[in-house]
Length: 116
Image 1: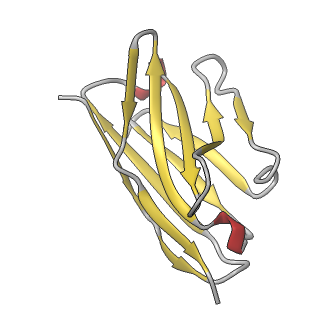
Image 2: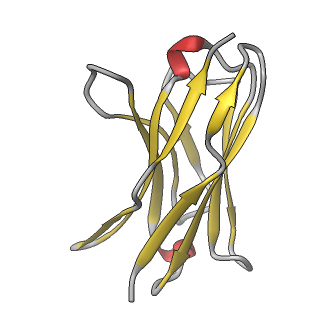
């Protein structure tokens, strides 16, 4: 059974850090393009980071470049999003996504709230 389970969200002060995890089962993350999305209150969902299958190439939204890092651990079949220097505008529900050809999988999301 295919499953993506996110964890690691929570409440953090501005300037703080969080690491989100996306644990996959039923497929191999190294063969999929993996992305982290977020949806802020009242806004559309946006992609914040991606990691590709070739050469561990990564890509980031301009708003998070230099602060967020997407990582893949093939041994654990898990993708991470390391988030540093968090800002209030980073608040939202973060979801991971896996795509390969016609396969398109989503996790349930984890809430990240950046507030003092």
